[in-house]
Image (cartoon, rainbow, N blue to C red):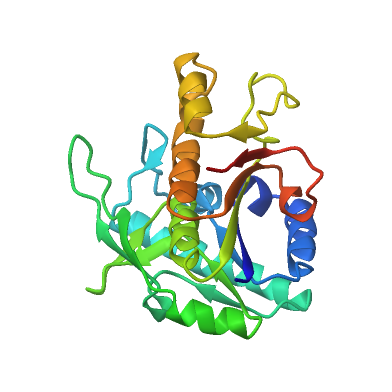
Length: 258
């Protein structure tokens, strides 16, 4: 069974030109099949403000009305995605930009309204890997933005962390998948004010203890829960850490394994 690396990057990399170029140069050199997933919320918010449309956020989550959906489609699927693909091509990494609608790869439903109406936010219900497997077999790298569809002509704004996790789980049936979440910290920290206090290994038991002690802050909970569920469903390993983490096994990070 071949190894596959799925790497998710966020705004801390996307919005820093030097950091993004360094990351994509290293990413291009990976000699295993690979998939890149990116967000872009900060860039979307900046462009939204320039267009006179104030971003709407509740508990850190974006409310995606029709106008906002148009903006994130332009920013995620257009500006960010195509710039990344162009940079990868310049680094001799043949790649193709994807939303969930392309190749019918990721199908979602509009999030049901409970206490909050998130608008055109998508919850994933199915991942189709056939097109991705063909591309990977021919050394072509898919680059996913944070947009899915519902097979009824509707695009949906979908969390990029979740897209990366669901892709990893679906492809784990054909590959040994390692999933990497790259962000601004060195990993899950025991002390939020000490970047070197990385908790190097987390399983369900350790997670429960950390949660009970209040060591893990609320912002990290969804990412950690996603990571644990991914390994439970067949992903070989999940790693959270700095942007150079996927390219150097000696760099300290947080690893999730069963």
